[in-house]
Image 1: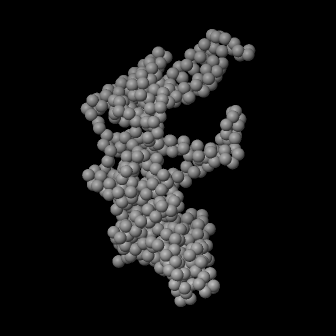
Image 2: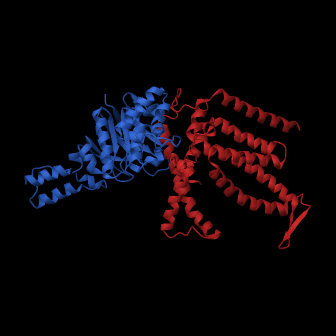
Length: 281
Length: 266
């Protein structure tokens, strides 16, 4: 059974002229990392919300189709009930703080307290995720005194503490520098290796080329492309969806025209691929 | 604010000033009930300015003991001074029972009764304000929320009570950011009253809109962390509640009850 299954999901916000998501269907296997890309207002955030049950329980609107988490259908459970199975990391980390906890440790423990986890277990689980996210030295610091990158890792830690099987992340690296972005993706990679299923909405194609197993492209709420990063990120349709090819891919296309990129070789989606390709010609 | 007070506050993005005094360690409910008691004494107790003055003096004495005098004094005068100027002028002239002329200024008479009335209101407000300052500066919002949750209050009520204390400084930081952004775009926000008033609108609109968006996001964040999940909740932070603390709380509640009864039957 797939870890996550979306069937003909269509959702319109109240009074919206067009659906935010239109007839979206795909499955995600346990331990897979899926990247969802698309231009602004393409439906990436709404898709993350739908996976976590925020749509249709928090944002009411016209909801058709089905989102299944294992055997659960999201429309039949509350967001709080789904929180044990699906973790959602929002785009702006500061907004994800509870607002009622005064240290990083307590902020991470907040979700566990809500779930009724015993004190001794809380300590174990909080320390484990603080170590995983590299925040153990900040445990007694105020969450409001962290940098944007540290707050983003805290938001991730707070969700991970609940230990959901599926993680949906809505542009988790928007406010991060390259080093902070790498740290977040390294954590996601570790989680995937532990068997977590990850869906990440992202604009930065170079990172998903390195880390994602599969890429889904959304355009105006519709799924227009799906496949491996190597296939999707070099597809001309990517541009029709309002996205640009990466510089490595562009360079290889130019190289092909000038005869410095091997004709039979696939276009590159990473720096290493590009170096290999140009060296081989 | 003294440097130590400032440092202690800067460690946390809240109004709470950290410390280890017995007042800091008092149960949050005791401090909350103390505010209620002060309010009841000031508004329902014997109508004498001496009693209200004593309440203020006691609160400042407690503030000194807790090492938060400068913060409490700063809040007190910044709030009370404009109110005092406004109220003494209004009541000194327009109070309906005005009889005894004290002095005249630019042809306008000022009366003793109006000043006394304004003074009484100001002392009542001052008593309540200084007691509230003790609560806000000496209570970690997280302690207040945990105490409420442990006492069986609905989590949403505990959140609504404690989160404004925690988020006040976040709001203050946002105001400063918006102010800086507006100034960078040429908006004058320093100067006389008219200039400041004009600058208010471009400051308030983004603040309110930003806050609305943040509230929505924070609600989602709470939901996805199981805030409304059914079943019993646990608490990492344990708030100590000794027999002495409970006895003090009971005593204050009895005094409040007696004052209310006396007021009803007097």
